[in-house]
Image 1 (cartoon, rainbow, N blue to C red):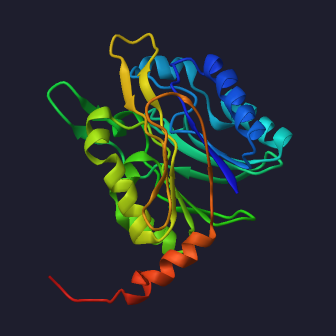
Image 2 (image 1 turned 90 degrees about the vertical axis):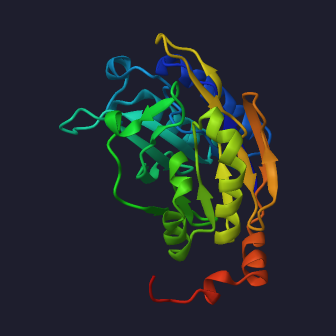
Length: 276
């Protein structure tokens, strides 16, 4: 099954980002893709909460969501919108970081709100407090399709194997980690973490990513790592997109899941234990 990861460099203007993203979806389908995935915060990358409040919308009013649902319907593809930043009714005014799986008729097959918030101090000059602006989700989501069950996750979720284990135990053959990853932690951990999730799960890991320095009106520019990855269930990196925005195609061979799980039946070999 031909599959496409879109590596994006979006700005803080959702209206300008949408036509570029839809053009890349068309390009992917022109190259034969039946399943297309976009990165985290496909609609808007911004470091300014005030600006986000001005340009973001609730799910029912979001133009990026409606536009991408329309193109999935037009082209007859499955489309994972890695995530959208959306307004919510949170009493603290926080947004949702929400992933959507769209079916070939444009319908929403599944929604997932990012559970784990990126609240870290990487250095004296690079800190993140995602929970100050985003409301964490509470529900793990396994999405059904006609080709494979998909375990939905987002970015920082990759550091929490309990989530991926729960998704695989529920039947996931594919784990998705759309991301807007820090360049510092990306260089140190991105490939290792995602390969580990694939190996321990015996599942495909698909991680479309944002890349580069993101245009915006804030004085503090946001930079992301790139290197969108497709990793097979044996842990082999089938695709590494490097740092350039673009459409990256690979063959999603789902028969490799059963093969990897037969060779290393770690789920069957797992045992309960006491302590420590």
